[in-house]
Image (cartoon, rainbow, N blue to C red; front, side, top):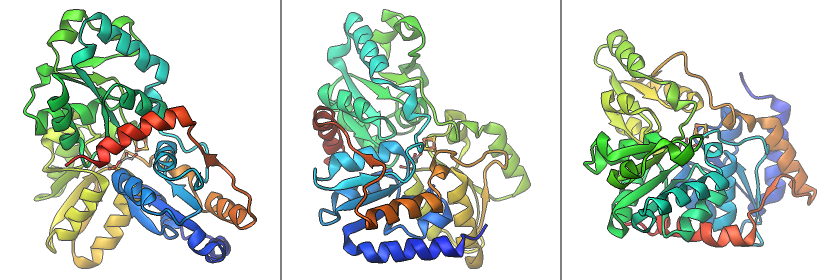
Length: 354
Ligand code: 13P
Ligand code: SF4
C-alpha cells in the first residue's frame, strides 16, 4: 500500500528540521514506507560500520531490530543517542541465546576440558550480553558477509569454535567455506542438560553450533527450491546463509542481503532469479529490476515478512523523529558500560578482520 501522504510529509519535515543532527539507518528488510527516509541502507555489517562513521550525528535513528541498535550504540560515542522507533522490534533468533544459557554452556565446555581450545564466534544477531561474553573469551562477532573470514581467524586462535546463536549460518559456513564435514559439527541445545551432548562428542567436534535459527529463513526448504526450478526453467536460486543447509546446498548462490542486491545489479537482462530471504526486500528487488528485464520472484510464496522488522512502520518513525525535534529522545537504546566494554572488543575484532 502507498504510504499515507500526511505521514510522509511529517517525516520529511521532521528530518529537515533535524538536519545533520540526525542520521537514519535502514536495514534492507525494512518496509518501503520507512526505507525511503533512510540516509543509508545496508546489511547488518555495512550499517554497523556506517553508524560508527557518523560522529557528527547527535541522534542515530535505527530502522532495523534491537541487536542492530545495540551494536550502533556500542560503536558510537557516549554523547550520541541511538533510537529504535519501536522497542518491540526484537529478533527471535537473538532471543534464542540468553546470557545465563551461554554461561552455562561455557561451564559445560570447561567441564569437558575444551573451553581453553574453544573460540566463541557470535553472529551479529545476538544481544549485547552475548557479544560481551564473546569479547571476554577472546572471540569475535561476524555477520553473514564475513562469517568465512571470522571462522578462518577463529581457527587460527584455537582448535574449536563455539558458534552462536545461528546454527545454520555456522554450519553453512563451516561446510561450504572451511571444508569441514557435517560430522565435524555438533548442536548444543540449551534446553537439555549438558546441551544434549556427551563430553566425548564435544571433544571430537570442531564446530559447536548453538541451537538457534531464524524463524523466517527457516521456513524455506528443499521443496521450495525444487518447486521454483520446475515452475521457472533456467531460474537462478539465490539464498541467504540463514537458510537450512539443505536449501543452501541446493541453491546456486548464497550471501548476505547486500550480496543479494549486488548480484542482481550485475545480472544480465533476461535472467531469472528466485530469492530466499525476507519479503520486503524481495518485493523491492522485483519492482526495481522488472524494468531492466530481470525477473525476480520469491523462493517460496508461503514464507512471510520478518514480523519484528515490520514493527518499524511510518507512524513509529514519524513519532521518533518528531519527538527528537522537540528535544525528547524516545526509545533510546543504551548498553551499560561494562557490557559495552567487552562487546566492543568483539565487534572491533570483527571490524579488523582482513
Ligand atoms: P544481513 O543483512 O547481514 O544479511 O542479515 C540479515 C538478517 O537477518 C538481519 O537480521
Ligand atoms: Fe531475526 Fe530472522 Fe528477522 Fe533477521 S529475519 S531480524 S534473523 S528473525
